[in-house]
Every structure is written in C-alpha cells, then in structure tokens.
Length: 85
Image (cartoon, one colour):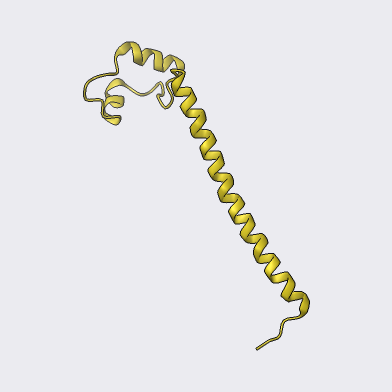
C-alpha cells in the first residue's frame, strides 16, 4: 500500500470538501432561482396577467390543453389574454 505524503493527506480531504460544497451550492442556488421564478409567476397571475397564453393559441386549443370542459374561457377573456401576451 502506498503511503501518502503528509501534504497529500491534508490536501485530499480539503479538495473533496470543496467539491462537495460547490455541488451543494449549485443545487441550493438552482432551487432558489426556481422558487423565485414561481413566486414571480404567481404574482403575475394574481394581477390578472395571462401567463402562458400566447397569441397563436386558439380557444379550442386552450380548452383541450387545460381541460376546460365547461367552456369557461370566453372570447372576451381570450382577447384580453392575447392582448396582454
């Protein structure tokens, strides 16, 4: 079995710790960004902005995609959604 030098015995654990810390920081940072985006999206929806509705989307497409069986999306709502998008 090879004997590591005294310096190598100090450097290897520090290097592993730094790599682990960088991985954890990346994960936590990614989750923070995602949480911020969700919060921002929720605020936009509460203000009445049509988030996710694009001008090319038709009423039948929106009804089919979002399972709107009762026909809750009316033409006036659609025009308002498209004009805000």
